[in-house]
Image 1 (cartoon, rainbow, N blue to C red):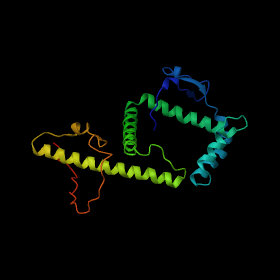
Image 2 (image 1 turned 30 degrees about the horizontal axis):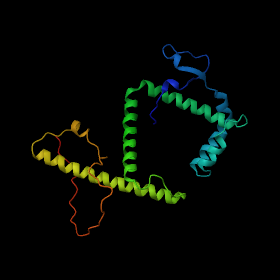
Image 3 (image 1 turned 90 degrees about the vertical axis):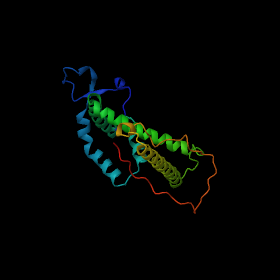
Image 4 (image 1 turned 45 degrees about the vertical axis):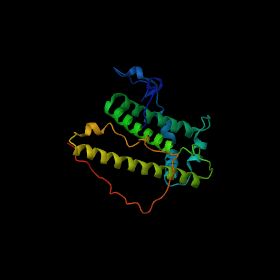
Length: 211
């Protein structure tokens, strides 16, 4: 679910021209053309099935539907369906505080991870390959490194928190909410990376008994 900005600039569509609402009528302007969706529903379903079965690539779909030519009736049918879906979502988003908080929190987590992974990919801000499998490898390697550093951060924070508990400091869930695994201050990206196969690995600290 996307985080919606500038809702005041977006259009809410009425089910039909005659419907009026007591308190939120000012939000709505245009109305949905249901007949357009009804007329082209079989073609729309064929497109959806083709995508699900992998019979047609997304780029081909975008080329065929990404034009508002008067002759492209399927484009306008999908546009009307999109207006229905977006209006329903905007209504939920506008009046459901918990939904907005959930979306905001989830989006922040995604943005934090992306910034963290981008920071770790300091030597290749732009993917130099134009081959899809090579691009996929670069992204997967980047995410692998990011997840390894996150694992290290979480393990180290867990050990420190456990030490604080042993010293008598109170640790609860409200305190832990202020911590993030996306810390970078202690990481030297430009250091010397050596592999020591003789180094003993300390077992992971899986949990901390909270108060």
